[in-house]
Length: 398
Image (cartoon, rainbow, N blue to C red):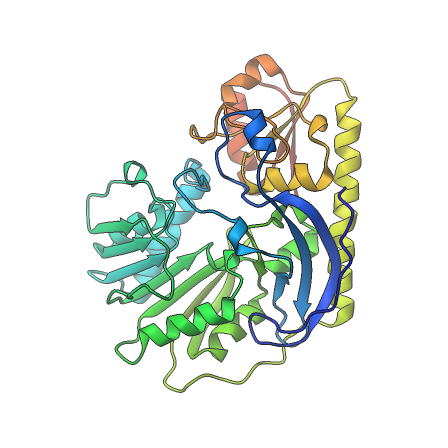
């Protein structure tokens, strides 16, 4: 395990300017970009690195990486973060889009998505309600955009920032993007400002749930691009403080995500809510993270001397975080991913090779560690199709 960095007390929560408390969880020299594609082991090993040093706000409960440098992170066409090759995830996208369309009458409406990737969710919600959508994402590739039979959408391969003019919208969504931004208070207040008084669009944000990360000690969900972490209370407080009425904030996708729905409020915003964590809660979360690092380091070390290979299934940020935090790339034989763009690439930092599922026929793994347990059922079915018999271990709570 990397040695923790010395923590220096910092004030000024990015969400509410409240006082910071240390989690006592810090890691040095982790990959600054977890899902960029590297076609050689040497390229994957010589990548920019940064530090993680977590703190929590005692006022609002927001968690952030105090050592984050946004200049180290690059979002471009070789940034490969999609989960949409999984049928489990595609069903989730369809169900989420259908529920929003039915619950809020999103038919023949104008949809804007901030951080839309290749447009998978934007396509689903436009098709479900015959809507017109505009997406923003610097990592978008036009040849990866889904095709739809009803509705229409376009994606602009650019970031949504202070210089972006917000198109007219009835529904604004931002999924799995806010956690990548350091100045979350500035971003949400800026969004409220550009909405102005011209309308009352429904606003939908989705982020990883810190409650689950803390409860499981899920250090594999802490990586450099994710510089911001939210509880339901801190996410709600952030939006209410910046001029939104929050309609709901609920867990989804196996309790992994927080899904917040809000509308612009008529007043200027509410005062900060008393929803922060105490020092004890922050320290307890940090200890749980450290304990899981120790346990998985030991487990992977034991497996490296076992009777057969250990394979990770899922060549994304979770695998990168697991391997670089535990610092035991020798403990795994390789990584499997169903995304063809990731196959034959190498994970940043560790340089472990990514292979197609069919490679397991010759590898004959002793065990497969599934990086996201929500995919265990789907992966077991794929292994059965390949006639590969192996132990399947879900990372975290299945």
